Length: 178
Image (cartoon, rainbow, N blue to C red):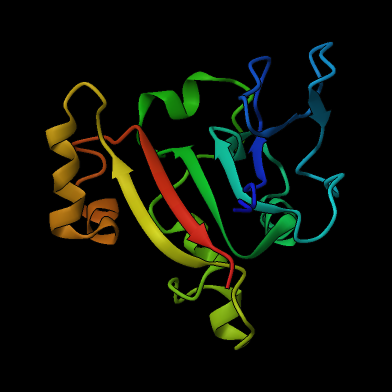
């Protein structure tokens, strides 16, 4: 029986690459198992190279977010999945790191889908880069029961009404390439 191995990319791996992934970061940390890649420019990978991309706490460091999302879309295979974790704008970890350029609401990355009414893709009636599979606000790792609040209210309502009273720490998104 032939099993096709899923090609996976770990964007922003830092000095700790993951086994089973192509690992990349802005520098190689002197390692030969990390590919130097800058999301502000063109990624050094062919179109439609990966079935799965993980970007854990990396997009907040990127100046050109639109380019980064286009590049992620370019190297992701059709029907491929990208999982993104970013800091929430009211969370303490959003601004503790001086290399963070931005933080995110539950709607920020939806701009690249058809689920944000302000999206250029909705306004120009062009195909979106991604379909949203999951959009989850993470309030507290120590108190995970609090994560139910944005689910009950909806992430957008949480952004507008409760995000300053009960600050979240991050957002987890799972996006699929159409």
